[in-house]
Image (tube, rainbow, N blue to C red):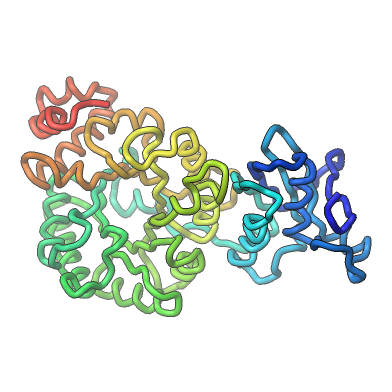
Length: 413
């Protein structure tokens, strides 16, 4: 029972998957877990702290959330689809229901949204990726091998020309992708127009030499200006855009993906996600965020390093991988991007865990190579080739100097 005197526990009732949004929460509380679960369901649907004259049995039955499973500290709560806005594709309202005031409930020491599943009625309001993993592969003429990329380093400080030189050297070394880092948008030392034009010229040069590559220009800005900026960047020659989804909002990704004027893929960075996802007992896991990014139209998304590197969430990374590529939703697959402390010696480990449908991305692992950026790019490309061919990297390095130099510096995982 909650304080209003209504029970939200319906553990034995059958569920119609087309009528409910199903959420899984990890709950830490001194209360009996049933009461804590009840409090979440009440707070996020029809309940309040006291009995009220305006709540009748009909509202409670039709719109009240219900707890359908309790196992250990895990609680499953289902929200009727009618609790959600009829506005098509409204992530803000979805999050206000499934991840709203419950985090402030005094009766809970901690609560973490671990997963969410949406019915067809809500999924149909989103278009998903415009290009997705397969579309990016077609653009890059790379049908099978993992994509292999870099992040321009240092993340800030390079001029437009030096940025373009970095991109060219990376492509000349065999990389298929490169990107701005999350903090670079339009600073005085590297204006976005000058950078975009210079990088586009570098990529055109690579293409004339027979190598396909794309670079994601970061267009993260105010919500009311992001489409305009993206259109400009595209007109200056950008072949891919990048958006910081947590800082800009899911609506920024959605606005770009659904605008017919945007004709290039959207690379989604998850900077600041750790403030929300890192505490294992409170906040929101990356998995629900991954699902929302795919719904909103991200073509590629950072998912960590699958147990390797500096940005790993271990086993949870694999759930994000599945959420990017799984066929349980009516969208194109989203390219999972593994980055964060990546270097040639852990490439095989990533491929063994992720398979070939992945973008493996190194910043310091390219720029930090003893031979420079082109040699670092070659080492990463060689490591990916070795993994694709099923050859041990150390064996492959016997005939590939750049890979050997990288392994000598950083070792093997």
